[in-house]
Figure 1 (cartoon, rainbow, N blue to C red):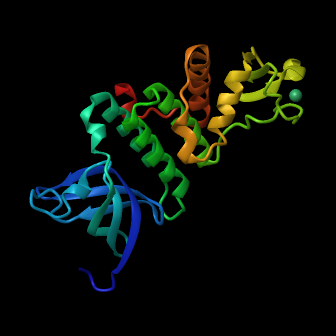
Figure 2 (cartoon, rainbow, N blue to C red):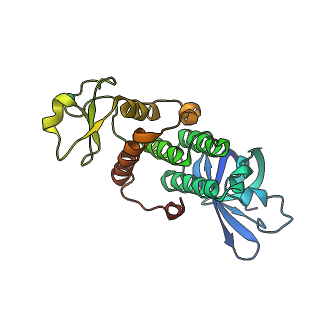
Figure 3 (cartoon, rainbow, N blue to C red):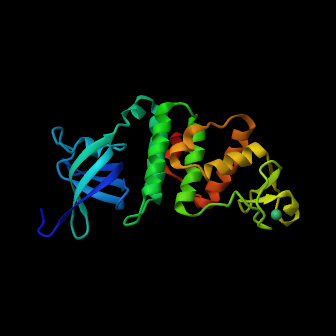
Amino acid sequence: MAIGSELVSANGFVISSMPIGESDRRIEVLTRELGKVSAFVRGGAKPRSPLLAATNPFFFGEFEFFAGSSSYTLRSARQRARFDDLLKDLDDTYMGMYILEVAGYFGREGIDEKDRLNLVYAALKALIRHEVKRESIRIIYDLRTMMVNGVYPDAFSCRACGKRLDVNAINLFCPADCFFYDCDCRDRIKGTARELSPALLYTIQLIFSLPAGKLFSFDVNGQVLLDLEFIAKRLRAVFFEEHRFRTESFI
Ligand SMILES: [Zn+2]
């Protein structure tokens, strides 16, 4: 190892892995402590390498890296939770890969990514539990990712007058600007507003307020799901800036 490199440890998920030559690998890891980092895994593609398991996406654990001046090299990895069950079902695998891709796209190096990591952990565990539909998991995950990114709409007050939205009344969503309004401000909305049922607004407010560990404890069905899918699609267009994720075509 290069002189002067220091050892750092971090906890997180392997979110992607690619071969380097015949026997090495480069992994991307979303960590609590270091944000998203890329690390070289010497010999990581060799069948007998102790680091082999840690080159697989969905590997979750504690990593030790040698920190060089401009890159990390993996020294050791200890698994803390297993997500192998995701691989038993192809649709779960694809949705899991989508979750990792989104986290990798928005994750940044050198910042606290604790909230993003907790979100990914909760979403992948929910996928394995099969108590909540994949479609619902995706919507909850995407909207919550916007919140982690710090760029998301306020679903608790009217965009025009600032009053708190009454969750027992009909409220409005504006597909053009992706903000929420009360009915008193209908005339101030650009374009055609969509009515939000109390159940729909309440669901959206839950997504933007529950702690990560409780986020995937409810499912969405029927008309609420259809309306929520429409709103999620508009929010993605605006708050994910129309980015097309590679894995999106598989889910
Ligand atoms: Zn208003």
